[in-house]
Amino acid sequence: MMADKESPKKPVVNNSNINSKKKKKKKRGGAKRKMTLEQTVAYKSVSEWVFLDRSNDNINNSMGLFDSVLDDFGVQRYQPKEKLVFEFHCHTTCSDGFLSPSKLVERAHQNGVKVLALTDHDTMSGIPEALEAARRFGIKIIPGVEISTMFTARGESGPKEPVHILAYYSSCGPKKAEAFDKFLGNIRDGRFIRAKNMISKLNKLKMPLKWENVIKIAGKGVAPGRLHLARAMLEAGHVENLKQAFTQYLYDGGPAYSMGSEPVSEEAVELICETGGIAVLAHPWALKNPATIIRRLKEAGLHGIEAYRSDGKLEVYSDIADAQNLLKLGGSDFHGRSGQHESEVGSVSLPVMVVHEFLKVARPIWCNAIKEILETYVKDPSDSNLQLITRFGRMKVSRGISPFTCTTEFIKQCLSMWLSKEERESTEFEAIKLELCYISISRTELEARAASK
Image (cartoon, rainbow, N blue to C red):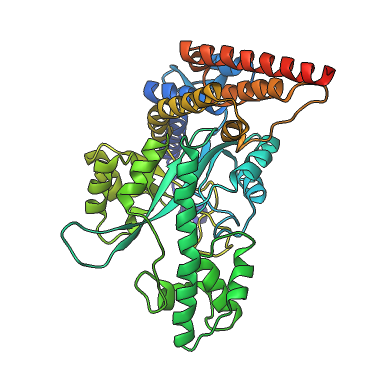
């Protein structure tokens, strides 16, 4: 017995401390699930827009969006039933990405993305394929583009700085589409000239590349970019990896760098605003003088800047956005390179309040753009104007039914996926839908008379 008493005592475990830690841990975990009233309202608003095409009554009923939970004080709180993942910045094989639009949408779906903005460089050619794939996976596509521009400081003769502007449009795309397409086409044409100049510089640096190989890597009809040149350099054995191609030769102002025919940054922002888009400055952290550039672009109509990345919010750019009264956004800038340093599609965690603020600004602009595009068609129901409406969608013409009747139904379907019931039933849109019905009836009668002769 004495030996037992003199044996080393077991350490006394303070169960109260453990229980206290567990309670604290549980409380912290519970706090993450709780939403403030402001967050709840924002989540409800964002969810209703994301799922506009769903006819489920639960979507129209605000409580159907949430699970009810009791907090530590017995107060009823709500947590979202479905996580909303937005991806606002990604690329496909239509520019310098490695995945096709359909494969990108599939990848996004696997990662839980609900809304994806496809923002290829200087082209919107991948949008139709992305939309077709999105229907299979239940993803909403925001038609977008990343525009290559050039910024020059006022009163200075120093070097120009490349600046990329993201543009986000409605389901019908830009209004004044012909002018916008020509604008992008000029940039793409400049990319071909730029690529040839960079190949010439590489040849002088004893790293010969064949134009045919670069074009083959870029793909049919794709304007070549620096990534395509880097891949050609890697295949030719001139560099050990893509990063080396950029850090030693292709970086801005590098020995093999060349400019194309990029428009002035302010001009691009102004055109985005004129065509019913939302203009957001891409990756401001890559700029030499972001504060000056942001201030100047805000004067031109800039709506926001990227302030979120996969590694979280960048406080300095968030503060600049707040000071300039600009939206804060962010995306993965996913290309599909499968490298260690690339962020995965859907990896940026955007707060629901950030998305809510974005949609509060974007939706009225998009609504007005859709209205103007439809009014243009009503005034002149030509095939060319019809293509402006259906350019990003595939209209199915049923056998025995007039194409113009199918057009009306197609437009109604597009509106139901993009505009709220209140927006669709406004006086302006009701008048437009009535005119569309008249056009459809008139065209059907004309076709019937022609067939009977």
